[in-house]
Structures are given as structure tokens and as C-alpha cells.
Length: 83
Image (cartoon, rainbow, N blue to C red; front, side):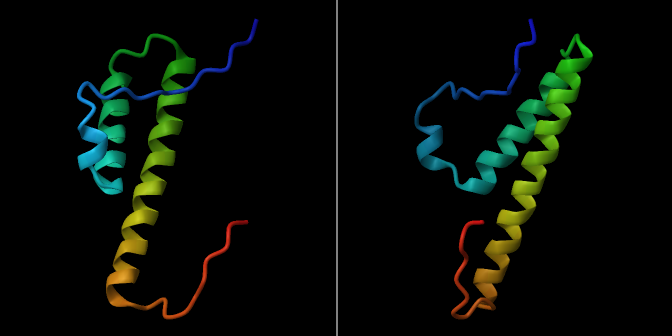
């Protein structure tokens, strides 16, 4: 039986999600996945964690880029629409 695996996150203290911004949260998720890599026993787990780290780094780069663009006010009246 093929089970689909995924990475999930759980904060020890509920106040973390209220106090962390997107960059801090994504950075913490990357750090957690990197820590779990040491304990991955199966190749599927390693691949899953490396894929998750790659996706999270992409999100982090995008958030930081958009944040810098907003600070520089380069967007003007451009509207973003989901694809």
C-alpha cells in the first residue's frame, strides 16, 4: 500500500504563531526540516524533507523579495491576481 507522506509542524507554545511573522515562521520550518534530516531512516523520508526544504526556501526568497519591493514602493498600482 502506497501512503502519501507529508511534513507537518506543531508548535510547543501556542503563542508562537501569534508572534512570528512569515519570514520567521518559514525560517523555523526550514530549520526544523534540516534537523529532521539527521534522523531520516528511509530514502523516501530524506527526499520528502529535502523537497520541503526546497519549497520553503523558495517561499522565503519570494516573501523577502516582495517585502523589499514594497519597501521601495516599486509596485505602484500593480495588482497581483492568482493564477
